[in-house]
Structures are given as C-alpha cells and as structure tokens.
Image (cartoon, rainbow, N blue to C red; front, side, top):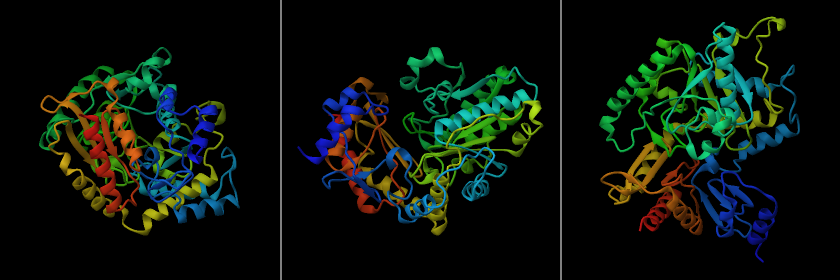
Length: 448
C-alpha cells in the first residue's frame, strides 16, 4: 500500500471533514499533504499540487514563509499564550496598534477572537448590546443580503442567506430581514452603478419601514465569496453608508474573506472611502498560520460599555485563546511582509496575468461570465449562455473540475458551478498558466 493510501485509510477511520459528504470519499481520494512551500502542497510521496485557493482563502504569502515561521518559532520559546482577561502581552498590544493604523479611520478599538464566525458573532452582540445600553431595547433584528454568507454558527447562519448551509437549522435561528443583494451577475460593467443605485432605493424603503427595530446591517464588501464570488461596485457601499447614517443603524463590514489585499486594496471598504461601525477580520490576518480574528469598532461604541461594574453595561464575551501570543506573532510577521515591498501594486500585475490566462474562455458557450475583483477571479459555468441559465446543482459539474484539477496537480475547489482562483500572492507566471490551463480543461470536461 502506498504512503498516500495508508494516510487516507487512517483518516477515514477516525475523521469527519468539514463541508463534506463523507460518502463522496468512497470514490474521491483525499489529498494527503505532508508539507508545503510557497504555492505548492506536497503529498506523502512527493507529488505536488498548486494551491489555487490559498487553503480556504487564508494564505497570503505562501506556505512555510520563512519570516513568518521564524517569528512564530521565536514567540513559542517566549510566551505561547496568556489569558487576556486581566492580563496583556506585547504582541496583542502591537497588533492592535497596527490594525488601528491600517484600517479605515475611526476604527479605534480591537476585540480579538479565534475565527471568522466568532468575529461576526461578537459584532452582532456588540451592536445589539450597544443599543440596549442606549435604552433602545426594541432593536433586536439584523438586515442581511440575499446570497450572503457570514459563517456557520447559529448566530452567523441567522444573518446569512446560504440555503445549503442554513436550511436544516432554520428552526433554531433568529429571523433576519432580507434585502436584495447588489450582485451584478450577467450585467455589463457600464450598468453596474445603475443597478447598485436601484438596489439602494429598494433598501431605503426597507430600512425606513424597519429602522426602529434594526440593530445593524451586515454585508460582505464588494464580493460575496461563499455565495459564488458574486461582485458589485463600490458605489453601492458608499450609498449604504449614507443610508445607515440616515436611518441610524450600524454597518457591519465582514471583511473576513476580502480583507488584506484580496480585492486590490488592503481592505475592500477603502474603495468606497467608507468606515463601517464594525469591521470583522480573520483568514489572511495571520497569513494562514494560526486561527485568529479581530473585530474593529469605534471609540464611541466602546464608550457605551465603559462604566462601573455594577451598571452591568460591560461586554461579557470571551474565548479561551483570545489574543493568543503565537497568533499575534504570525499576524505581526504578516504585516511586516506587507511593509517590505509594494504587494498591492505587485498584485495588480498578478491579477492582470490571471485574467489574461483565461481569456480563451471569454467566448466559451458554457461560461456565462468571467468576473474579477483584484486577486479574486471567478468563471461561472452555465447551461445556456444566452439566457444565463445555470446548471442544476445536483449535476455537480464543479466536482468534475475539482477531480480533473487534482489529477493534474492543482487544488481547485469550485463553489457549485463557479470555478474560481484566489491564490497566494507569491504565485508566478508559470503557476498562473498551469492554474488557468487545468481550470479551462476542467470546464470543458464538466460542460460536455
């Protein structure tokens, strides 16, 4: 038995994998990974696979980055973790200072957690609790967008619209108010702003009706990633900020997937020149090394909780590994890498190469659209290009692309009928060519 097969069999005897129907692995081999470097994953026998999806969008500067690895190793010999309730450490303080410095102006307070879902939960609780502290106890609801995704805990499922993830658990969830997404699928670029304006008008009517009972609206800026990499223009974000100010509700920006350079700017909100009331960060925060998240918020919101203990206005929320020293070290090293060279400018050229590499798919009869926002590029397979009719999800055409890619040394993980690239920023021209060629072949196979 091969080393790869031996690890697969041991795995299937004891593990339950995320977002997976485990029965699939009766015919779909697991990818066994022994080590990784740069954009490459290596299996137990030396086979290599290009990580075209940054291992679920977390890796920014490649696997086993020397500077980040060294910083984490050094930290492990000094302090691995200390409770952040009543204690502090240099890494937690420095990271908070640097996050305040690079995020949109006005986000002056940092609350750490250990996952993206946890960060969203915290923002929801903070917003609700803020209004309670202001005496507005009638505010108990949140506005979310169609096709949105904010995590898979019960609270985050409540403010998402990912039916596949959510439907089973609906009896357990809060009831949110659903607003139409500004998603511009199928529209030419010149029509995006007009479409966004129409969606804002619809949202204004909804908020006018519900504003007195709403705590906040939560959105994914520019790209609804888990919803199929659907995209919309910055003008919608600008208009949303104005609506939130007009109706007096909080704006929660979930930048967990799109932050740290994925959309072409350090944070997607920058492209609309807005500051949300809460910004949720995770994934790329530690460069893909360790689980960590952060909620950024305004000083005025922090002050609404600042009082004598007996007032019971404090925010009593905690995670055991809040502000973990090793995770802080990884995050600080990741920010150092950003500072060492102009990565955002370099990414613009990388993004151009990615788009050029799939140009041959522009007229493919079953590629309805190729869309891109910075380092995120998506190709949507459709049954009929003229009508943009999508394939039945039960046909699992994305699975055909996934299998083909693994057989040819690339890790792709399509979202339904959407094949996408979100590689580490260190990918080179050869890696882009391989990624694009294998994806194009996979799409041809899946749409025959």
